[in-house]
Length: 585
Image (cartoon, rainbow, N blue to C red; front, side):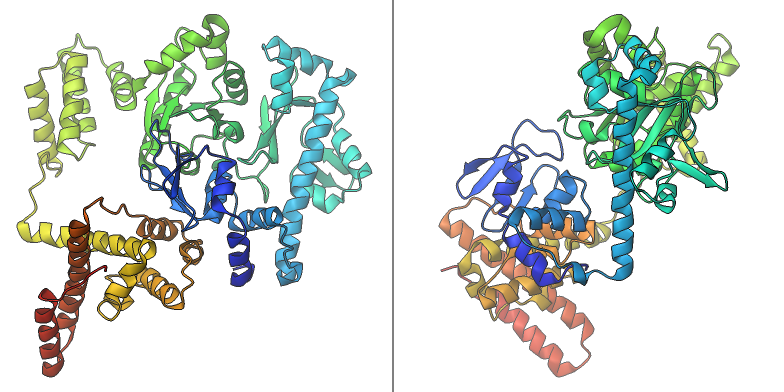
C-alpha cells in the first residue's frame, strides 16, 4: 500500500461518512441509521443505508457497500490513491511525499503533467473556436443546432489551419518536447514538432471525473480521416472510456443511451437526454461494458439505422449481456441517427421511441427474419431452425419458454411446434432443453455452504451491532470456527477489535480495499439484516445461529482428525453443544 496503514486509518476516521455521502446523496435519518436513494443503481424506494456507528454504507438493493474511501472510488471513479488524497485534503491532513518511491513519483508526476497539458490544449482550442480563425468551425457547430451553452459545456474547440500551431503555443508555455510527445498531441522529427490535429473541430474527451484525457477532431472541408482521435497514452485508453460519461453517470436514469459518435451524444444531452454516451472511435468493447456496469444494468442502443449501425448493435448486444446489462434497441427510422431524429421530430417523439425500444433478442431475430423469403417453404424452414438455435441460448427453462412464446406470436409460429423444434435441436447438439434435476445429495452439498455463510454473516453483524453478542459467544465460538478464508480473516479482525474495545468495522474493510469482490463481500458480512423479533425469538435465533456455525466446525474437524482420543473429545463437544444455553443477557 502506498501510504502507511495507520495514516490511511486516520484519514478515514477523520472523514465522517455521513457528512461525505450527504454531499452526494440526500439522506434521511431513521433511528440510528441514515437512508437515501442508492447512487449506484436506479430505485424509487430508499434502500441505501449509511450507519455512523460502523462508518459504512450498504445498499440492500444492489449490494454496493463499503467505507468512505470505497464510496469515493465507486462514485467518483477515483483510484484508491486519489480517494485517500481527496479525503486527506478534506480533513486537512498533510500527506508525506517522501513515502513515495522515486519511480512512483516520476510516473505520478508525468501523468499529472500530461493531464495539465491536455487541459491547456483544451483551453487553447476553445479560444481558437471563439476567435476569428474558428469562424468556419463555429458556423459548422451552430449549423448543427448546438447552442453556445452546449459548446461551452462540452468544451468544443478548433485546431488552426497551421500544422504546428498548438506545438508552438505549448512550447511558449514552457512544456518540453519529451512531455508533449507523451500527450500524443504532437509528433517530433528533425524538422521540429507537428500537431496531431489541425483544421479540425475539436472534441475534448473526458474521463468520468471530467479530466481531459484525449481529443477527437472532425476535419473541416476535405481531408482524411474525417474523424481522428488521440493515440492511446498513459492517461487515455479508448477501450475503457466512454464519451459523455462524466455527465451521464450523474443523470439518475435507470438506463444509459449508447450512441455511435460525439455529435449524437452532444445533441442528445442538449435535448435533455443527459444519460447518453458513445465509444471513442472503436467498436463497443467488454471494457466499455464493465465501465458502464458501475452505473447501470440497462442500456438502450441508439446506433444509426443503416447496415453498419445494425452490425454494431449485433456486436454490442452479447458484450452487454456478458457484463450483466440488459439491452434494448431503438428504432430511428425514417432517420439515420439520433441527432437527425431529434431535429425533425423533437425530444418527446424520441422519448416515446425509447419507451418502445425493442428487446435485444427480438431485434436479433428480426435481423435474421429479414434474411429469408417467407414465401419460400425452404427458406421459411431455415428461418425456423435459426430461430430455434437462438432460443437455445437461454439455459433457464422458464426464460426460454417466455422467449419462445414471444417469438411464436411475433412470427406466427405454433408454440408447440417451435418448442418441439427447440427441444429436438437441443438434443442434437448436446444442450438439454430441460436439464436433469439435481439429486437430494447434490442439493444439500450446494445449499449447505450458502446456509452456513448466511449464518456467519448474520453472526458477524450481530457481534458488531450488539455488545452482548460477543460476551455470549466468547469461549464458545472463535474465528477458527468460520467456514472459509475470507470469513475467518474478517472474523479474526472483529474478535480482536471487540477484545481490545476498539472495534472499527470501516477500518477492517480497508484491509480488503484492493480486491473489489472481497471488500464487497466483507461489507455484506457487516450489514446483514437482523430479523425483527421479540426478545424470546431473538434469543432463540441467536442461539441457533451460534450452534449451527459451531456444529459445522466440529463436523469439519471430525473429518480431519485421525487420533481416536481427539475424535472422542470432538464427539463429546458435539453432544454437549445441543444442551448448551447461549444467551444475549
